[in-house]
Image (spheres, rainbow, N blue to C red):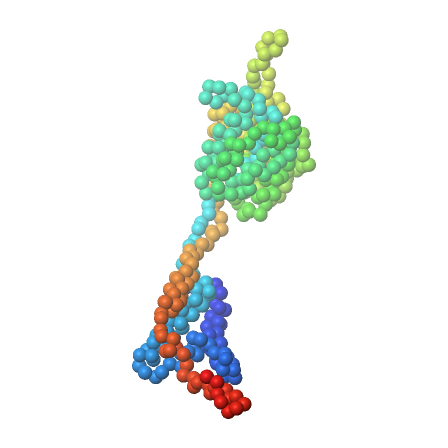
Length: 348
């Protein structure tokens, strides 16, 4: 159907007629004033050719005015409503980029790489697969920052994830609670069944304003599920002055707290000791059943104002190019008598 955004513009349709009669009365009082177009048309002789020219010009002028008013009313074609079902979940990815994520206790392609590189590789694939989901990204170290709010633009989230670097946030501490709390803040306004936080860390909370358990309780109150992932190898070999020795790179990982956070919200805790294990975890998370959300309605709209505007400009151009003898357009006005001087004579 056709709609007009500014229908009140049609009130201007009688404006030329009002101006014509108003200025015509003014012209009767003062012969020096007259409207060139309509006043001149009224003075045309009654012969057929002049009447035809008058009707043609008047019709073009009226049609031009109608098209310009129509264009000013901003007509548009609005199609039938189209339902855009949005399925999937609202996922906030909370990623640890503290200094401990620089530990090179994992391998990728036969080379030792740090934990953050493994995380980028696995989580990046996970993001690419989440078609239909809204994704957000939060990075945390000593503080938590929103890198990407909830969006359907998975490519941007993936790019921002790959661009994350250790050191862009103060890296000497880990604020797990602040990261979860910030994710809850983003998700609390979304529909209840579809909100999920996936939090990955390799350490223990030792900074921030909110403790991890408090953040977990807040998420549980909002019916937001949290899946926690602890990353880092169980054992590794290091060289020292006294030779090689076996160490535990994940000694600082607080698995008990991460487990309690997940279970209190209906989620689950996962342990990733290498890349393959981390990949399997995200494959499990990838199987989360999508939940139908409220469908959005879209009505296709096509603007139409340029059609009457173009026609009006074309008619105006035609009116400007029409050349009629000026004698045909001048009104029949009797010549004024020349003034008489004091001696009874006249001036030519």
